[in-house]
Image (cartoon, rainbow over all chains, first blue to last red; front, top):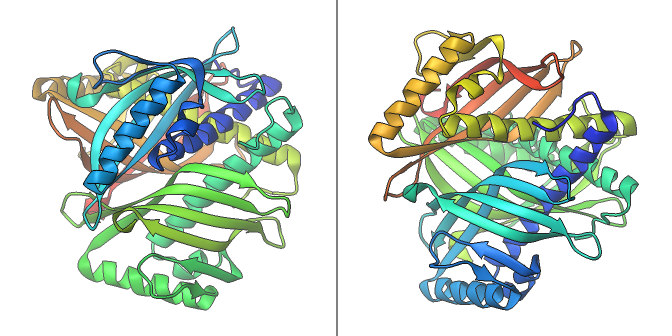
Length: 150
Length: 150
Length: 150
């Protein structure tokens, strides 16, 4: 733990960033799950990297990220399935350069139309978050590992 | 994101309200899941509205909310089933009138006595939260959509 | 709710501790799930007590806690199964003596190698957290109840 519990200003700063990361993740994943592929891609840095466990190589840059998300969402629409990505048990470690190293447990819940929801994948997400020009959080690098393959 | 990351007082205010909403949801749902139907109903405004996906029309007011929760809990007791409602991936948007618009991913977990837990329903919850006379959060309006029906 | 919404310093203090508890739980459970049994045991007080639902009597002290965690992890490795413990819907009640009473909903997710993840257990966790010499949070007492046995 890097949180200094005696240092009130530091602890308040940590609470600020912790709330902000959770809020960011909720918003970020709602964009993905609702098919707002371009808006989702814009929550990465322009050269953002996403290394998913299922892709042969990392996806780099907003155009490629948006295209990948759009394709995945179109496939789900065809199948009549709703996916939800939840980043939970969030551990945020502020770095000296102002970036945030964040590890979280990721659940992907899949629900077919008129069917039962199921826990589709259990993963661990390793993010590096940075701030954009207007101060908002952006994903600079994401690496995801699947529990069934580790 | 309405969070201004440069404005420290605003960001601290956001962290306060974000923690408060999560704490409120944990308490609110524990009341429901433990069968404290009246106490749960009292976490709505007196004219609070709950539009669940399964009811033909919204439930309005604390008496109707308490009656509905009591009936649902009695049914679960008969079946020997424990339900847990988790409001996760919380996105809080403070409004100009002091209310909070909150979207969250809702998991309902069902566990039969001596049986396996299952993800019963995956939903999205849209809340309007306001403050009561003594400042505590209350649900003024709740709309829930089920992923299997969207 | 003990949170006084008008009292800004108190509410800021609550936001600090709420973020800290969530961060602590994420870190604490990642230690357990990754097999860092000794490090996990060190997040309890030296005389920490863990009363799990499956053990005939509480586990007391860091050596016993580490031994139990190590044994459980070795068994999972043999089975080729990854477990994840998520403490969600956290309700934190600061006590007058400086300790924290925390109730949370605990999901244990199990994923076999090359298999489907499943919700293995749904539990409620009742913790008493205190601060160690350098201010960091430690579990002094944990009691867990299983939803399938209540």
